[in-house]
Length: 414
Image 1: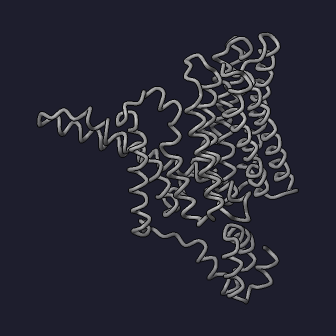
Image 2: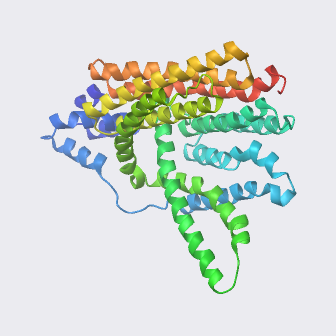
Image 3: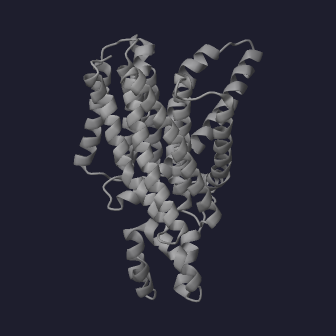
């Protein structure tokens, strides 16, 4: 891309073709070249074009808005199935909570990316298979494989959503990294929607209470449920139509929390030594330890996704490297603890799931850490770190399939 831009610097038509062929790569490459091209009038035009920030909020087309409204109502109706059809709430929500939002989001991105009928059929088939399978599993309150399947089904649906997000595009690795960035952005936007909705709810309920109407039950059973189901869909729509809304917030969050998490993690490991607690003999502590590991890994990936999109400094890359190394240490402790528990008390569905997850995470962290180290030694670019993360995501997808669909059969639904 670099050579193509330089070669066609005085050819506006060819530059436009390059931009339309791969917008993220063009934007990233042009940004690195611009300091040397500031004297070129066309280069200055492209600089302004690529860095133009529209302050106005775009609500998209009327068709898009109508789709969001219908999708939100559809998600709310799915969430109300137990009330509408007298279905046991514990049974329904434990198995089907992912189907409240993910199908609507999948349709949104499939429509936005104009995916082919074959690709859409594959995604729909995957979701339908998950829906049928999870609801046919025996209803046992003591089944570990059922709990694991329910948890990993949500991750499976999230993985299917990533395929809809990427669409039928050639730059798969970069789009997968974009999917991680989308997740960070939609969490921020949905969080703001929840906060605003919470304030509106409190004001509404109290205003009606002042005039003698107690609307809490009706409000939460209908308006609240529909609002909760709609929030991720509306948040997705807003981030996709107005990337500038959280485009400046997410990088700030990444810059602030990466060093803070690094300090917290180091202090926590030191405190753990003096506390006398360890994940080897304390099952609950091991679960919390693994949750901490997944959370920190998510922060690393989110920070990498933001760092590859904006200008980076050596300090930021160093923080990412140190955070990755410390996370590998945490992973090593968790992995050794689960191996210890398996050697002492044998294999169970939960231990097998945790063991597999820890091994996959460790491999991923080592690959990412190696790439970050290469960035510091100037042997590669920060974008290669993002590519490594992007190309590894399907491994987690395969693992969710194994735990969701295969574990109950292997362990006899226990």
